[in-house]
Length: 153
Image (cartoon, rainbow, N blue to C red; front, side, top):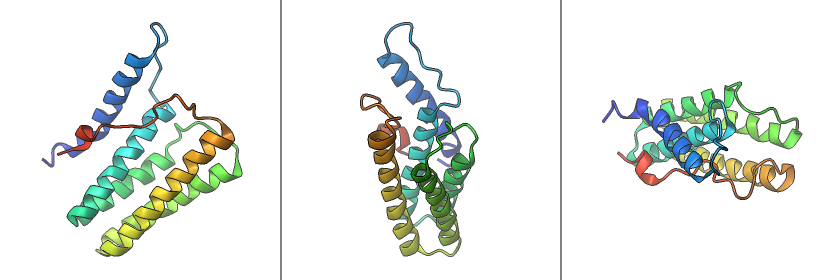
């Protein structure tokens, strides 16, 4: 089972790539290497791992998921968006990932759960801002949806 988790991000990207290329028009395949869609799929997988760690009281998994979120946020592969609200959401997510790591180290399940819930709220608010204000996410795009079987044990 422990050998499965390192393969999860790669599996998520591959599933996303197959799903997106199958839904595209012929001859219009998307390049997912370094794309925001692929990075969002990885972020979603990390948040799902966080939730699993919380319900199983697995502090190692909570910490690892927080570290993954932090690495993804620090990635230079994201599209450059010059907008103060978007920048605020990115900074807030990084702060929450750091807090999640600290709380996992302190074995504080209630604090980690509270931080996770705030993190989900930040994600929703950021996506609302990107979709409705910045208009950088198309309403038809299926960004980051992963079937539960992709993250199941």
